[in-house]
Every structure is written in structure tokens, then in C-alpha cells.
Image 1 (cartoon, rainbow, N blue to C red):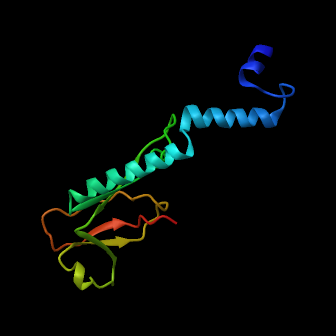
Image 2: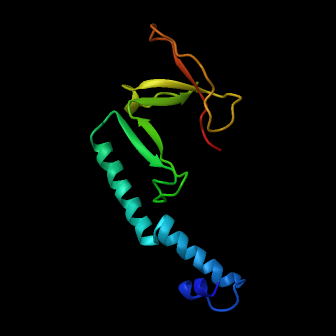
Image 3: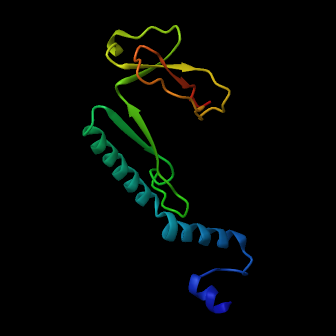
Length: 141
């Protein structure tokens, strides 16, 4: 234990929680997440990547989120993507299509009994394009 204490320079008894807490946070910062500056750099790099991807397509934009897109690279970290289709507008029944969206495909949103953020399974009509397409309410509360 003395050799370990000399190596990591802990002052006081080995059960000194404050010093151990500081050492653990340094270990996590240096070996797992990176410094605040590292995280800022990774966030900026991913934002630039997202901007470059979005300039190549006028039909669809991508939004990256999740822990890795926030600059955290840890076991279990992931990327979450959201695609924004620019030539589609979602409206509730009774809403009027805005003039600037008249050329877009209209999807009608209906309330569903599924949890917020989830999409109830449903079929899309095939063939007859005059039939409205229905989708579930996917808003997140």
C-alpha cells in the first residue's frame, strides 16, 4: 500500500475519501473521457461534419445527438441520428398547408395511445396518392 500511495501521491490515510474522489475524477478525465478541451474539440469536429453532410443534400438534413456526438467516448456511448426530410410537412387534420409548403408531401398527424417519442405501427396507402398518409404523434413531452 505504501508503494501505491507514493506512486499516486495520496496524502493522509488510505480512507481519505476526498483525495480518492479527486484521483478517480482525474483518472476518468485523462483515461476515459478526456479533458474539457478534448470534449469541446470533439463536439466542434462533429458539428462541422454534420454541416458538411447537410450541405451535400437539399432533400434531407441529419442531426446527430447522443453521448458520442456530445464528445463522450466511453463504453456504451452511441450516436443517435435524426433525419429531417425537407420536402415533407406534417400537419394535424384541419390545419391549412402554408403557401410556402404547397409543393411538399403532406403527412397528417393523429393522436395515438403510444408513449411520447414512440411511433405506433401503421400502414401507408399504396397506389392512390390522393389518400392522405397517416402517422402517429411522435412528439416528445
